Image: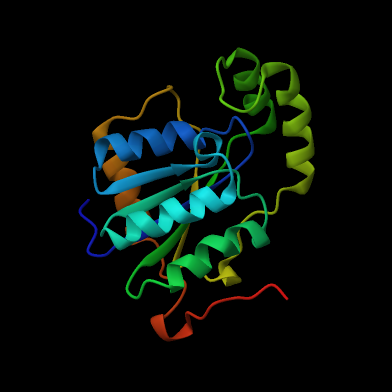
Length: 182
């Protein structure tokens, strides 16, 4: 699917849910997307900078971090509002807790989460996680089921993007205003 506009695609989900796997495949199979990953960039501010930089260069962005609550996701919405015409999509990884735990136990070489701490982080995040809501301000919202293999094909990525693009538009451009956390 060739997007007719730039997109900020915000991933959200538990650790081990497949966010980075999807984001890496998206960047690989759709060169218009730039992956902005907090584990690799260091902190949220670095991700914010990378998102703005990619958007200013005309790219779409996939924000690859847990984004477990409304406040965290609002950061990316507010950046989207700085760039007229850019759509905001949120994709929730719908991977069951048990599958996330299983993946974490076999995962090696994660840049910030050693295996011995992974399950406690998963447990904490599962209690703090708030699923995206239609009223948050995203243009499109999509739930992605767990992928059966550790890789996505170009066709699969294209089909997922098409499904998201065909999903119900949640906001009208006139309704897009920055949200402030006072």
